[in-house]
Image 1 (cartoon, each protein chain N blue to C red):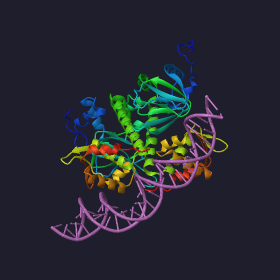
Image 2: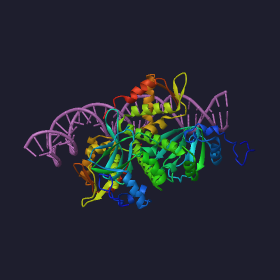
Image 3: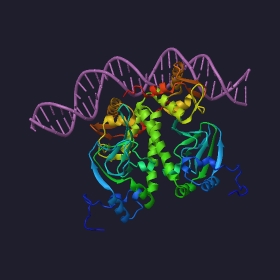
Image 4: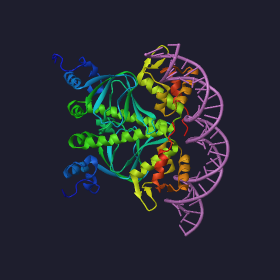
Length: 242
Length: 242
DNA sequence: CGGCATATTGAAGTTATTCAACTCCTGTGG
DNA sequence: CCACAGGAGTTGAATAACTTCAATATGCCG
């Protein structure tokens, strides 16, 4: 290594970027170097579509920093959020699902940084790099599990419980401890939460107001702080009728 | 071939059983023979759990005949159907998702016949048999798509539309043309439909009654016949508020 | 400081659930 | 072959959970 920097326009990425991440954790420094050199890094503003549902899957991605919402849009234009992706995970991995188009739209929830490779390298990564296939299928499995959970929630729980669950999950995945409580560390609107729980922004707003009155959360515009997670858990489990 | 039948207690399976099925379609007769000989066939009565959520994934399955409901049970005991699996597909493929327990329970919706193999053969199948990996990941991809669709439906559509969609999907996957219309060719109760759509058997019953009054469907106990699929499609698309 | 996205909240309206009572099949065993 | 038990389905009435409508308030960024 240490060739006098080639065509790459961006400053060369450090190998440590990928070293700790599951799909690459079993690889040697030299292999990671190769992988990095084959990919492209790009920064995205908040609220930008990284790729669109139905578009030909030309690249697959690793989210280095930021947050992604995986969204589907209905024929009538409403959005439904299927998943949230935290940094350090692969996304847009259509090839792992035997697809040649993206099954959903990926939108940045905050300013983000992602590394991507052309799909033709997928097969190579899978065969050449030990653990890559295993780990990516674990990711797929985890997401299938999450989707399953959401289906069950939507089918059996009341709106209040679904919102509680969504908030708890976001805080778990992306929480940051502050002196007031655990803050969800990316901007999230009432609208976003409603798209995540299959309800309206009005209902979400009412819930958050009620919770705030009870001292369970605090919320400013686009920010939610969890003061009393335990009581939220209680709410999320409470009396699931049916 | 034509060896004088070995240890197998069951009559030997014919290679043609698997020949046409995607995960095995690119294989030679001899390879299919080997695969068959490594597996076990079993018949299941209707309403039997083939495996349970959370149990160690010891085997993976190919459904040769019948129908499977993939179900999750909530802490309070309600069931939610996540997927329906028609014959000719793999199921219980936890290893493909990097899991060592089953993520959901598989229940036979009708009398069924399934072939199964111990999970330790999974890796072997993937590496040794051309197209097996590709095709199974396509299956996974298809199921992820279905789950996605269900999430969107549950989040945005009214109960009537969800039931209409569920009925249409079942009829498409498992319909049989009769002189009265398309019949869903396995027994399905109001309860089943409610678990599939996240509603109550009461509401489903009312819907089917109303539709029957309008000549859209006919239904006997555990049987549904679609007389006018087109009008059901119209219902399923109608005015999705929100 | 203006303008726009975000958020709040009451009141009215709907949809679907819950409760409850009852009917209709279908298979089983006397 | 008939009775009957239990699963499956139906349907009205009351109620609850959310949504919709509408009006107003509150940051926030340029």
